Image (tube, rainbow, N blue to C red; front, side, top):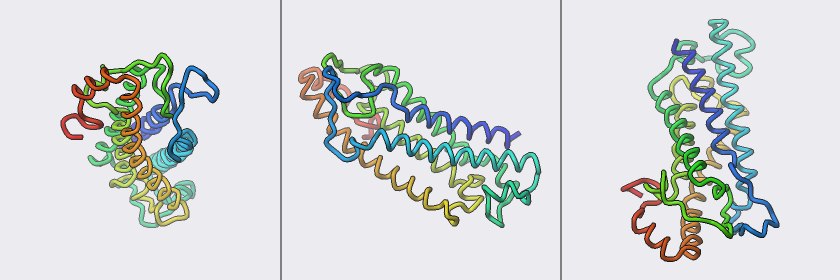
Length: 238
């Protein structure tokens, strides 16, 4: 039962990551009703970065689902089809198919982070874009998740990516059990981790810039909002 639940967690993680890192609204060059700010390198590549990382994450989840499914069918790690995506000679079938507590924690974090981001998409509506953009009829959103902290979508992203890392590197996770970091595919995992760290840093810096843009546009309303919601990412902490 645990092995089937693990596959459901993996599928849910892949789907939730793909949806929550897909822009709900697109910015278009030449749109006179929207001012797009691209003051950093991250702002210029964020859309391409989201596509690239979605492909990497989806592929890694598909590989792990494939390993688990084949292992369930054959009840052995000796199948040639398993060796293609799980090359480790020391891979343990029981560990690979077991649903360890830390893996469950990672999966729950992924789903919770995605739920938070999707909540932000819904509350922000047409104002939510992956680029820093201000519309002529832009309005200040102060309810929903934005009543707890000012940049909850970034918080959701932090939570999701941390959950993803826990899932893959915990006991029973694909990277750990199949020794992926020791193969040629390990560079892709390392690249993703580097991009994740870069995204974290960029989100923190971008939040400061977004605050300054909103302060310029909404003046007194923004001042009151910031007074009522002083936290950027984590209520009562940060």
